[in-house]
Image 1 (cartoon, rainbow, N blue to C red):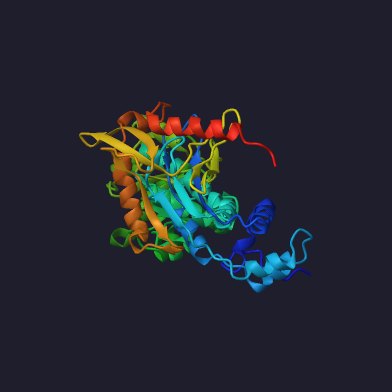
Image 2: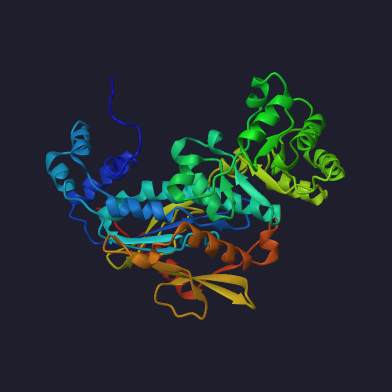
Amino acid sequence: MNTKSAWVTDDNASLLTDLYELTMLQAYHREAMYGSATFTLSVRNLPKNRNFLIAAGLADALHYLANLRFSEDVLTYLNTLPQFDAEFLEWLRDFRFTGDVFAVLEGTPVFADEPILEIVAPLPEAQLVETFVMNQVHLQTVIASKAARVVLAAQGRTVVDFGLRRTHGSDAGMKAARAAYIAGVDATSNVLAGSVYQIPVAGTMAHSYVQAHDSEVEALERFARHYHGTTLLVDTYDTLKGVQHVIDLAERLGNDFTVKAIRLDSGDLAELALNARKMLDDSNLEAVEIFASGGLDEYSVRGIISSGAPIDGFGVGTKMNASTDAPTLDITYKLAEYEGRGRTKLSPGKPILPGRKQVFRFENDGTVTHDEICGIDEPSIGRPLLQQVMKNGKILAESNRSLEEIRSFAEKEISKLPERLRELEPTEFRVDVSKKLELDRFTAAKEASGNKSP
């Protein structure tokens, strides 16, 4: 029986990589290729139903880089594989990440081909970390970008993350809650995420609680007596009868009635909300709110609000936390420079902008107009987005922001986007590449095509 833990920890994270990263690492070591390299992480193309992405996952990537080690257990396992020799494994014993990281801050809206982060480090170090860094930035950027659309569609109404049970694994459930909160979601049902990230937790009750009692009336009253300020689920049997049960409960309890909201989880949510609101208001229960859930996404939320339905908040789960309409991004991590020379690819449709880069954002009266990708030394009047967040393998103190600070930053940056980008309909955004950088790419391509095989 295998007794090893299946959970990723700081002790085994060095193995959470693709095998070819390790075989390349050994090859670089054998060839003494330790020169400085720059790798750029970016997304080639945005999904057709994303007008922008929200960069997320940097904090976890930096934690990994700062704690990267090859433990004795890891080395023992690698020694069982035929690809690796004893001298290489001994070299790994002292392996650490010693490089620099430049990145857009988490919560920044980003667009196609723009560097989300660049790693500058000795080639073996920069190569090895590819898989883990991509994994963390990819997932959280996917979820934050989807969640931002849901929050924008809700137009200021409460949005709660209900997606834990259908996310793709426990780590994804944790990171999805974090990413959604960055994007503006107000709370999560994920208690562990609430504990670890200090995200507000929220929840209601399940249909099984109602089913377990002899009657809906009994279930609703008992739950209301257990939890002051609770939300009662009213659609287990007949939604409007459930609403009436809540009204009757208010009459029985009098001043002891503290129910905050009712929850609608099935049927025509807009129509049911209209009828429920009238019933509650006619019974002097104007303070009782209406919360909706059940297979929601940004489009259904927008449709409900557009209909005039009096819904105060939404619980959004699977379609947000699994980003079902765009579950992956065309994310890449590519060598852009080695030993001071720009590197590129000639593969069709997969160009690489060589060298270290900077992204400048231009605004007019507080609204973003366009971005420009430039070489690292090019001057610009735009606002630079890439900042140094790690130096010599150490996380810089100024890059250690709280989740609340990241969330506030994201809200501010999203509000600066043109209104058309904040709508759900697809639209384009202008991203320029500087003339010098285009020339550098041409030069790098020319040099690459002229290389001779050894």
